[in-house]
Image 1 (cartoon, rainbow, N blue to C red):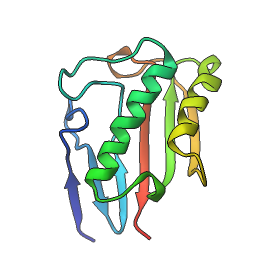
Image 2: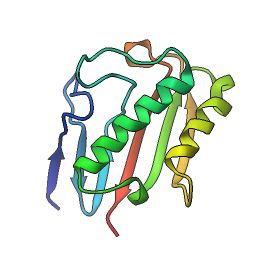
Image 3: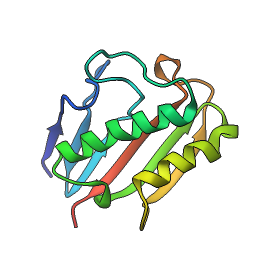
Image 4: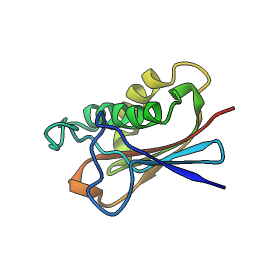
Length: 127
């Protein structure tokens, strides 16, 4: 199985030894996307909800760079620093997947890169 590296300037570049996404076998696997502005490389948003929106837009940009759309996303993992923010994040998330949302896990973690409040990764499949 061949694999293809996916990159876009519409999402923050890798800040370590990884790629924004890898496409392989009809699937696209994004790296975790945080609420970082791709131009300034600065964290955007003060609240978990604001940061979730930016992280989701970054993940969407990577999925689209791979030639897919959010309708092709089959699994999302959301990492959050505070499960008490679940409802606020969920409201923002629902706007990205208004119908037939993908499978999803939400995991509370003690710390995220750059001390952000939210990180999102996606798996998409070309059907």
